[in-house]
Amino acid sequence: MTAFERLMAYERDTQALSQISGRLGWDQETMMPRGAASQRGIEMAALEAVLHARRSAPEVGEWLETAQAPDEVGAAHLREIRRSYERAVKVPGDLAKKLAQVTSEAQGKWAQARADEDVAAFVPVLEEVVALKRQEAEALAADGELYDALVADYEHGTTSAEIAAIFDAMRPALVDLRARVLDRPAPRGLEGKFDEAVQMKLARKLARAFGYDMDHGRVDKAVHPFSSGSGLDVRITTRTSESDPFNCFYSTIHEVGHAAYEQNISRDYLLTPLGRGVSMGVHESQSRIYENQLGRSRAFTGWLFDQMKDSFGDFGIADADAFYAAVNKVHNGYIRTEADELQYNLHVMLRFDLERALMQGDLEVKDLEAAWNDRFEADFGYAVDKPSNGCLQDVHWSVGLFGYFPTYSLGNVYAGCLHEALRQEVPDLDAQLAKGDTSAATGWLGQALQQHGGLRSPKDTIAEAAGMVPDHAPLLNYLEAKFSAIYDL
Image (tube, rainbow, N blue to C red; front, side, top):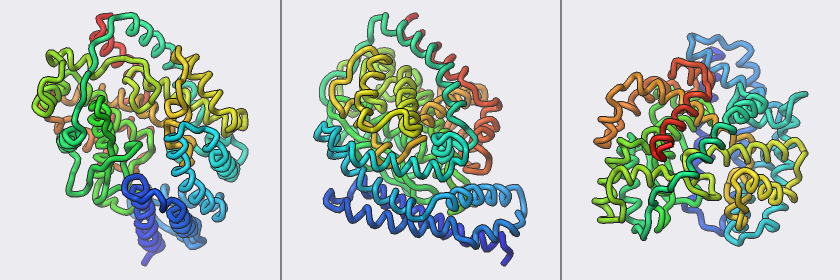
């Protein structure tokens, strides 16, 4: 075997073990008994120690020195393995193991603190997580900004300064559009109760409508919806609320966007570094375009309106136009995942600034709740009423995902570019969506972007698919046109 062949065989086993680790995380969120949390933390730490040892093994470095790529794909494999190796050798194995254990345990403590509305109970373990992530960032950052080293785990090739510039350019336009929208009469929202078992039945129908392959996936319920896995085993979760079926339906469509990306990556890349989404920003571009530009479009909501009438009978919305307005209603709210499409990015910007300050040492964990509440009231104009609607609402910080939040809004920016290109490629898109047929849209995304997995860099992945360098203008133009029409601005 050549050095390249040895490296790829070794990497296949590493990728397989990583998938097992991910499945343990899926189980922890969906089916694991609550009392098993401490043992699961030990299990996750042990597996992370094995993975870290494999990723930083001396033989990997030796193979990388001599391996010759046979083609463009092979060169991309080497690039991604080298990036993983160089990161792994900078982070001490004991630190990687400790992070895995503490974040696994912190997840359970966060869930309990959230249920109890008790920030003080969560602060000590979050302080430990933040301290460990700072250590990790220090090991990775060299002389650069600590937060940039963490962003690189989710959106390599992008700095926090670049993200801040994009957000600073977007915020005034979003705030202005929101003010004009909220000055208009609000459309009627949903009222009444919606059977949760019926919601799940329709959610699974929506998953299939957007191309989710149930032979290689499953839909379960969790507190925080997510997608897990790649290749032949890609699972999603959603959640239900008796009074808000949109939460279930659009969480499902969102997670199907993630899952479809993973399911549609070329099978040639299975259990290789290219066999997963290239970045979280690109991943979010798929979930957000599925959820918003397709799922919340006037055409598709017309079809969904009929599905809801079939499932729930008369639910108080007069017609498809009123239903479209209800789906896209701009409303006050605390929860990022429940935010309307217009205000969603403002939630992300808040988290970006706070977690960047935490990593830079400008904000201490004990002051996080007050900082969150002050910033939220300044940005949204009303006060946070309870911790589960404030700094305890998201799971991300408990599991150490610092640097992840900005990718949600980068995904929206990317989705705006892709949607503009999609409309040009599929001129009769609305006619198809009106029948509940997303195949032309999802097929184009599969061919133009999803099948390539990690072959290209994140920015190049979007540029190749959309035919433009990523830019926030298409997203802002789309939002302005959409909400101006709904609210008659």
